[in-house]
Image (tube, rainbow, N blue to C red; front, top):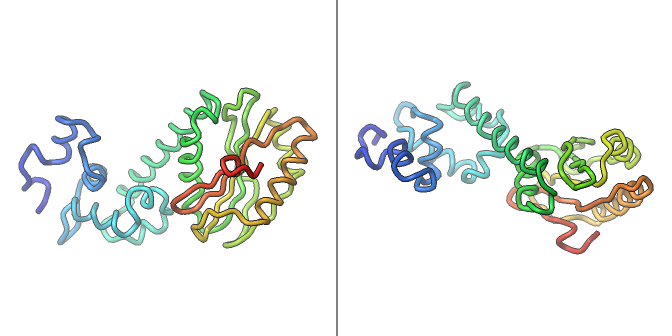
Length: 224
């Protein structure tokens, strides 16, 4: 059944306008973005298939553009619209973190890092540089590695913190395996960076490990 065959008050657009976006199921919201289906499948069916194949909205939003290009029915226009929604979410979270201390919005920090890092097929070490009120200055990818490891040089992190006049940092890296559990090497690296940055009066507020479905905070676990 296509959207036009549904009763008017159950069509996603009309439902959203009448009852608000919170009234729509995930597939209905996605169908509004996609607008049209493909041969043999209406837009709602296409939306449901995408959600099933990629692990719901969180998985779809973390999926690399190259993976979406292989999905029948997702042409350049639809992929561009999905990418635009993802970038809007990133920028909205970045603006929120720049306007208030990061510890006022710990979940927003985790969501921001998941959007930035969780979908990557290789390991990336990134740093959220914060001002002296602990508001976001920038998130920068400092080092990139292979599937399972990367090399991090504390001197480069210190140099960048000084260049940005940062007062504190939140360290972050992803685990391409999808499991966010920190390793002993992660703990050792955190302490090394904490010591190096302390020499220039920059605090390490947290180190977050980003997996597919979770973000583990060193601060919350008492590992700092």
